[in-house]
Image 1 (spheres, rainbow, N blue to C red):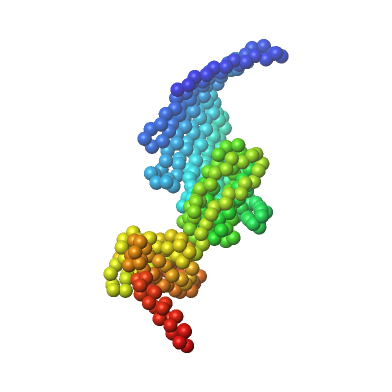
Image 2 (cartoon, helix red, strand yellow):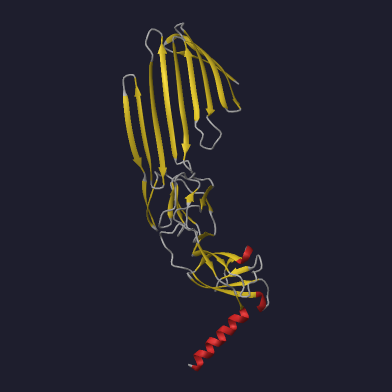
Length: 348
């Protein structure tokens, strides 16, 4: 609830203007409303009373439900009403729209009105807008495309219109990943994206959602922070690990399952996965061909090796990763095979 009053006088004429206003606003289960009443007493003695009612109501309960906003204004000698329907669409709200209409009526004159609609698309390489409107004696249609071309040490990146302070994301191999803090922004095919607006002298957190990028890329970190100076351009580097992702089913040679939770390492000793149920191992960041070691103890009998060869990667496949059936050979069996191979080579 609020109330206000003001009075003003003029040096070059007598009298004063006096204005009183009071109002109440609140929210209810599905929206908000506001009621305001005011009176103006002009220096020439004329009075004008005004009542305004505003409401905002969401038409639904989902994330993308549109909002209906209405405003009714009744004053001495005239009245007006405006209504608009606005909302967002798309997985990351990259589409926005607004449809509106208004009507006005004054004493002694016929009613007038206008209506229109507008929409905006915010994409990774720019922004497109379009609008159409019409009234009693006029009509208008417009469309526009805006964007920026940013040159940086890694090349040139197309983006939405940028402000005075913005950031450049570098995430090698993560093309298709979404920049969560910037609507419609995605990492391009060279691993770069532009965050259009950053707040100067404040801590900005820029998150990347790996969804949309290849399963063959692993992020060491998906969040970076920066507190830039006004007018600066900051580089936000996200460490990524690029390599094939695969789901291997590799029981031991005697048919026994691998121990659940056993660690899986590559030839360089880097952990690339763990054993899941039914001897299944999901590994990420591996080469097309090589060997993996599964270890669940310190003894040689507590280790085995998976030799694998992944099929050539096809650009046409829709699969997120490759599935392969193989076996995990005990280290003793591996050594025997190596000694046999070495003996055959020596005899030859």
